[in-house]
Image 1 (cartoon, one colour):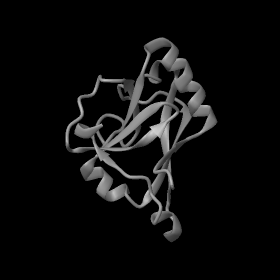
Image 2: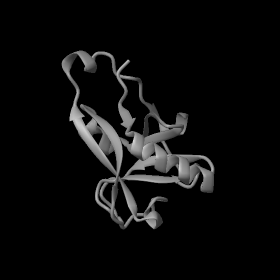
Image 3: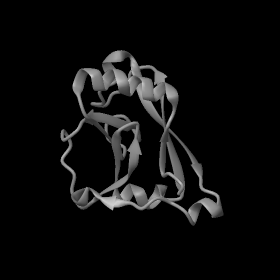
Image 4: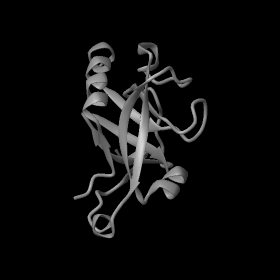
Length: 125
């Protein structure tokens, strides 16, 4: 199966730090509010999900969601969560560390497109 979302080793280390402080975490790909289109790391349950949110997968023990409208644009790309220096302006938990999560993306190959992991709506996860 081809994963829809992945994570770099550097970003996984930051998740470990945040998990030690906050407990269970989740990600939601922002649709342009506050900090553009950035992945937001939140305490699990801080964002209420509904049938318009899509579950794309799990990265380093964190469920990763995106709105259905945004998924329509990004459904042909594999997302990789990475981290960079600099403060974003979102509510994401890494911001006080002077870091921000970012998304790197690439188009799936035709072969990968045939083996994509299944998505689920937020209301069913």
